[in-house]
Length: 86
Image (cartoon, rainbow, N blue to C red):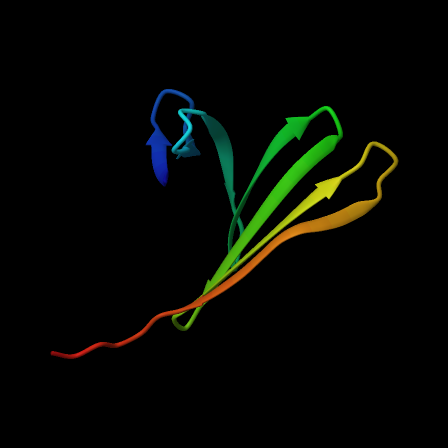
């Protein structure tokens, strides 16, 4: 699960995550023209998740950027909004 929250004290958005195994995090969320991104540091490099949304389509991409600058895609997802009627 994840929540986008506003931190009034820091004057910034945060992306708060909670995993089923009890782990989670609290990350700076950076708005962009198309959506937002958030990052986390790991021993292997920085992981960057980029989320874009347009006309009912949510696209999320995750990549790890190694210390030498090489980028490796580690996650990709595209969701389409469905209009379901009773």
